[in-house]
Image (cartoon, rainbow, N blue to C red):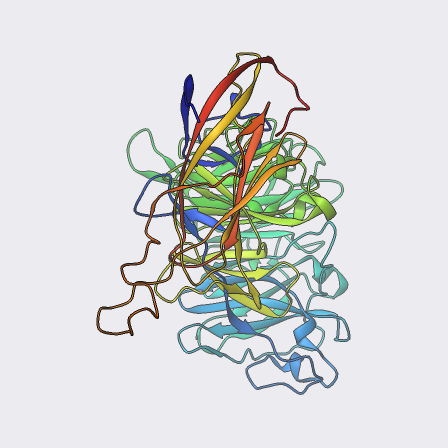
Length: 563
């Protein structure tokens, strides 16, 4: 077949984009890099995301009593902790402290727990559980998520479920971290709590609480290293009107005179953001409005990163840098991912975490069939997005170079989820074999007002003989299939002298990374097309550049042409 007047078009996957037209996006834009992550050795090369593995299991689906590792509240007959959802947790070294619900036949309260990752065992949480536990919050729909932070030796728990109890706050006494004691109570001193705080944060050695009174939402701050006392009546900050406050974020700021100063960021819904600096004891406590009409409705989307404080605003992910500048949405206008956050079904359910290199954000996407939950990863050094990944989080926190997460729709378990492959990586997640999708956007228009003829294609990839053949589909803008082919990995080469002649193939395996001919059944003709590759996840699999041989046809563009 003649290749006259054809032009090569390379397409090296750089990251995913919301765009529906590759002509206006960046070169290498993809609609899906599902369960694929950047290869750490080579730019624009993708490998399979390792599966999350179970780390903590909260009992079995049987009535109690339960093992001594559970707090006394779990020892009551009739509780079913395996039906509970982990609503919040905090990693302190190798210890995980958190709250797990007991619903669907249990007592309807969140119970404290402590798990030692180093010994893979529970640590008994002592203390009185009778009447001191917050009510478990709903697992679907809008909610006010519990928040935890460490102030001195107390790990404070701000939980709106205390609204159903005589208490306002809960805390773990960590005077001995290996013997945590649960308590519930309220503030003492001259600033009483009138309702449970919705958030707590450590700042300058004090506990800061958000209390959304109907008349005047406020931030109350405790004495230094005493999270339960307010000595002075002026340990209250107000914000000018009755718009509820949403959440805290902790941020360090560059000092113009040199060095770093700490700031506590206060989000006032989506209307404004404030920063608190200084301290009352030093006489330099300051509250300043950043006067930027944005914010967040997703408290669990706020996370610290090497670049600043990230949060999900109504128009996408934004960043407050160390100079207190608020970025434009990161990924807007086809430059990455914004639509799944703009169209989040329940913004308060969005959760995020950063382990230093990767920001992971889970959301329920209205744009998907059945408003599916999805997870998107933002690679900070490369400034690219990947996803949607198929094991979204209900709550997630960094743990070293990895993450610990409570998965969406999988109660009573905590998982460890790595952001890079290692020699122990598995590709079976929650009992399901992982699969990946590598899909281009609708490829760029040539601006020549004619249809495209595509005669040859190469896909740079590494395969394996241990997985089924990968599937490759070319489809048009209406998602009608133009052609469908497959590529299979070769079997390993036999060793000379280790087989009987004629019984096997002799040579080396042909699965290494290399450009492979895509065996289309006929030349493809289209006005717009995208190319979707899918397969089973495995450690050796790598996906790299597409190379297409384009030919511009003289016929005027015909959107019905697809052959």
